[in-house]
Every structure is written in structure tokens, then in C-alpha cells.
Amino acid sequence: MIVVSALSAAAGVWLLVPGSSAGRARRRFAEERASAAARPWLGVVMALPVLCILVLGPVAGLLTSLGVLLVGRRWRAAAEPAAQRRRRQRVGAQLPRALDLVVAALEAGRPPGAALSMVAAVVEAPLAEELEGVAARLRVASDPRAVWDDLASDPVLGPTGRAFRRAETSGMPVARVVHEVAVEQRRVHQGERRERGRRVAVKTAAPLGLCFLPAFFLVGVVPTVMGVLAGLDLGLG
Image (cartoon, rainbow, N blue to C red):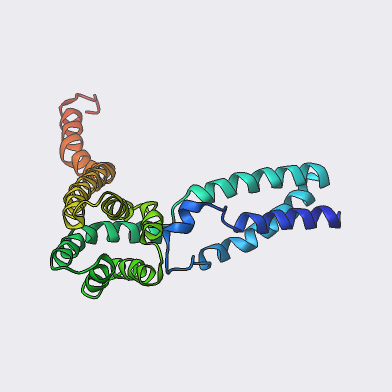
């Protein structure tokens, strides 16, 4: 029984450890993953195997808890935390204007690392942290293409990394390539903003309908019913 509980508890700890993924590892250059998000789940994950074993028995409880933990692990790996989603949206909103500044710095003769560092100094967080992290890596990297390869897997800055990589390998003017990315990212951001607006309109339709339903009932239905009842001869006289 003790061995079974220990194995189940170890499986719970395994659930809290994010699955290894090269894309997620490359996504943050200078930022550690926040471990605070896992703390509220620690007690639940540790108690679930023990509870299942006490209720269902050693064998059935172990199998049930392992199945629940496996499904929970996959769900947690696929779910995007709300804070991370807001950060990604914020970076995406800041990116087109920041790329315009990068293009201006590149056209002035600045190398990519210096251009990114200059722009990071004038834009707001969180994009400033991302750009400064890339600039810091470029300052110490022996091969800039390795930095661009890592940046290319980022969900928001990926097109920027691919643009610099394409200019690095093909010899194309890097300012022109980054300008094309800025135009495309501005178009993508506008599309996402319109899509969010449509989702808000759909989500608010039902609450607004519920708000107007009592007024419609009192103004439209009740007077009609009262008028019909007033015109009926109920034979009470």
C-alpha cells in the first residue's frame, strides 16, 4: 500500500513538470518559466492518488489516478496560461511599430544587434525585454544564424527571426525584408483585433438579451395579457 501511494505521488509530481519541447524552450531567451502557476495544483495532484486508492482500492485507485494524471498532464501542456496569452497579445500589438523603428535603424547603418538594442530602449515592456534578450544573444553569439534559428520558433517573433535569417543567408537587404515583415504583422494584428471584436459581440449577445427580456415581458406581454383578461366575461357578477 505504501509503495502504491508513493508511485502515485511520484506520478503527481511528474504531472507538474512541463513536458520537454524544443519550441517552448526556445520561446523565452532571457526569461525563466514561472513556477508559481504550478503551486496551487500541488496539493490537488498529491492528494488525488491517495484519495483514489482509499476509495477504489490499491489496483483500481492506482490505475484511475494514473489515467487522470496523464490526461491532466496533456491538458496542462496544451493549455496557454492567461498571463502568457495576454503577454503574447501585447507583444503582437507592439511589434509592427517596433519593426518600423528597427528598419529605420538598419537603414541608418546599424547592425541588427545594435538596431534591436536601440529599439528595445524606447519601446515598452514586454516587447522591450524580448528585443533586448535577442540583442544580448547576438552580442555573444559566434554565429548569428543560430540566434535567428531560435527566434524563428517563437510564436510572435518567429516571422522577424525568419526575416533576419533569410537576409543573412541570401544577402538580401535586411531593412527591406524586415519592412515586409512589419507590413505583414500589422495586417495580422488588425485581423486579430477584428476577430476579438467579433468574439466579444457574440459573447455579449446572450447577456444583453437576458437584460432586455424582463423589460420586454413587462412592457409587451403583461399589458396584452391584462387587456385580454379585462375583456373576458368571467361570470363573476
